[in-house]
Length: 371
Image 1 (cartoon, rainbow, N blue to C red):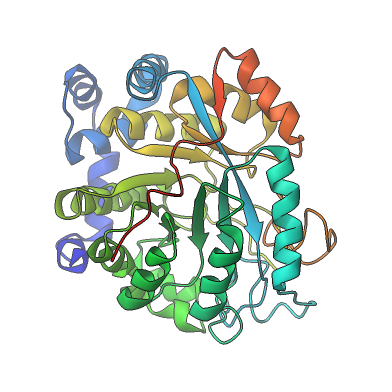
Image 2: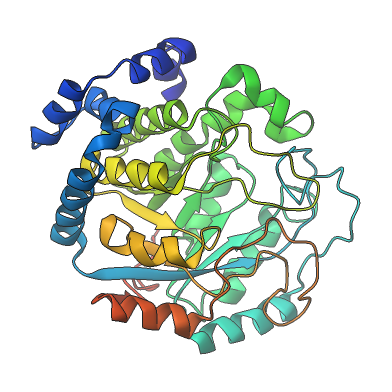
């Protein structure tokens, strides 16, 4: 399991080694054709900042070679904001005493009709972590209802057991996104004081369970703003390396969510600038040519316009982060505020104006697992 690899490293020692990287380390990493984890440290280090233009050009070349001039479009569909966890950074936190909403089957179909009319074939189902309300049976029924509408269904929900992932995969689930939020184990409990999510080790082992199931795609990442973003991304890269070695049949994606305003949220402990976020995205692309890099509507339109040519391969559009937000309950509790409020057509036209092709579908729902 990844935990044994993870426990070989000390957070403070890793952080010190990143900040100790030099210009020579950066130029050596950029000159290689295959980079290792030490090269990734150099590329995310402060020493790499003067090389951002070179990194951007290289990231652009690698991305175009591997993915072409395409951007995958997807939409989140929030099914429920009910949650049993207390998380200091999330609008869905249990101690946030606002009205909760869980979509019925008919409401799901209403939201699906809207997204389908917008052109979406990839949908990400999102819930809070409330096992009694939105447990495996609820998710199974949601996938069954929505499969006729979409070519690709992913989920971002509470970590599940291996047999539960197996059940959902056999229903046609394509991908699971499960973010560690931070790999700083000592401080993790500070952000997750109560609820099942407070179990750091259980969450850390979730990608292993997904790999054992043979999930088509697994999404990893951290919430930027909780702890040092460079160190957190080193551990994310370490996790990806482990997963690709042991579960090579799965595809992997990385997201870069920055802590955004929402009801009851803490202020970011660490702020990453736009320039630093570009550096991080380019570093990931240079380090791993195959991984999918996703940018959500947390980022503003100027940033999203420019990041397309620098490594991003997937992008949400027209997003609502509250249950029923597209057609039913536009004012219900949001998980976080979005920063790019453009319509789907506006985002599509922007992608085309950059010389890229918006891709709605790259995997067919009929290529599902068979028992």
